[in-house]
Image (cartoon, rainbow, N blue to C red):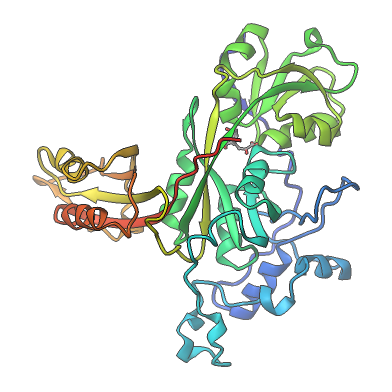
Length: 405
Ligand SMILES: O=C(O)C(=O)C[C@]1(C(=O)O)C=C[C@@H](O)C=C1
């Protein structure tokens, strides 16, 4: 009986050549960034205007049509706006003195589903739960598939898309640590959250029966969420980049001893047969996704807001207790706390010595609390926390998602 997860040697999504832009050359950066979008249209019937995947590494296109698709309904000049880390973000250095290049704060309604024509990056291929979450967050959006989580962050930073929607925690599998780390590494802002009910199906090619299956492919989180069923069936588990990518791989290679764990939407898109439905260990299986943008939203007090922060603490007894007490004292409810190893170069901390011994186990604490940054109580709590934190960053203050889909 299989108990371990093995990483599939096959990457079902990426079959691409690299062409990295030079970081020093703005022109080559924007051109290469635009060329990072390549054509993949294996499914002729599309529900709505879809874009082509953003790849982890750029592919220089030689096809004139590719360039047309890169634009995806927007003008090329729009896509070639200056990225956030550009030397031109100070308008005085912009040769065209174009003030439109300056980021504008979003209003809290812009973070919500009232915005149309947005291009929204998600990780995975069509049929991934992240795509559905992106469509819940921005119902009229153009969902843009990305190879990796990091690609989605970069797509926003390079103005290839307007937002990214990425999973951060699941009620059965826990935190998606990679995205916590990427939130710190990148300078995007959390502008909203989406909670999405994840209902997994076991699927295979037509004619393949449950008893024919020897192994099953899926995202590691999805495999973990279906632990009981997969163990009962005695299937060898193989981890791939996303659930829909697993379904696509099984269909594309016409595998007859391998199934996939993915959504019913993925089964439909890739023409697979659903052998078992709702195979997650708990019927209440919810993934929380974050909506990310280049600019923060203006926090309000007109509806329930949540704020996400990250901080590190001075060394000493009871410091974490004191840090959490700043919220308890003000009756601010914490909804999530996560700790991750602190990589000093990311927060600019100095190399500490612990009584002459080097310190290897420094941590960052990610906390979500139920208050808006427009609320004086929350401002006071953070002012208090700053007194004994060595690093503090507000990742975003955004409306709470109260509608479960
Ligand atoms: O693979 C997908 O379909 C995803 O959207 C990714 C992901 C995740 O990373 O947690 C999202 C939701 C489910 O919990 C399983 C997988």
